[in-house]
Image (tube, rainbow, N blue to C red):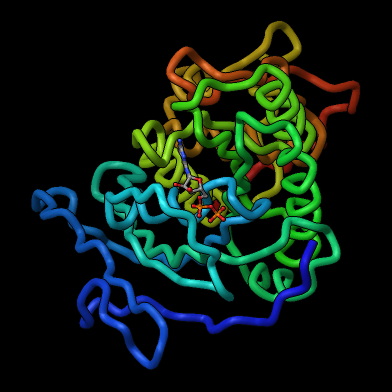
Length: 301
Ligand code: GDP
């Protein structure tokens, strides 16, 4: 891999227009929020740094440009340093509680290798990672594993998703299988995306924003009686987010957050981990051998 020099970090600024050259670097616009109906006006805001990681040429720039600017170009330009785009996602946590997630999306030039120190700096303080590989090229999966390892060290266990990109060219079985295996090992749901056709791009970025919110809003208490009931249910059969949401009458956002917390603490493991026919993640959870945690019940003051 050829050595590279650190490039500029460019922050997109909504006051400047698209394509404007500013001090020799491109300054990019942000997508304005869609006009929201009054009921969905945000009641709080969360800022989140999201980093795109993966080998050169897998489509990181194309994905972020598709998501923020809704455009695609066939030409291939190397990203120098990092270009930062912005886009906000509005999520209703429950009726009346609406969170606006202001994402900064870091399109970085990492070479995809593990000891890529300059790229590690980009990963610092990330709240989410989009790890991208080319689903027509199994050789791009191992750099992605390396970058996910680096992200874990630099940013901690933040929500991560794998984008198996260039799906419009027809996925190769080996790349698809390897990508899914990596996702399962690292707890990162997978999406088949196409920056060219637009498939699953909005879903993948939006789902990452949702997972970042889940992590932040989950009650601090480590385990409670809801977790106990989830573990009891998982003893009998694999459970899904929908299952937990309806059994506990909680939003699917909190159901997923609880399932994921129980998986991260190794009380649950993936029972199923696959893609549906539309290329979106399908997961369910089953019990591990680990004994149930002691339940700390809340005592009213
Ligand atoms: P990066 O180096 O990871 O940022 O990759 P780029 O976004 O620059 O893309 C590398 C090349 O792959 C470019 O020629 C893109 O046009 C092409 N490309 C990116 N995404 C897709 C996709 O979803 N489908 C197809 N067919 N080509 C893509």
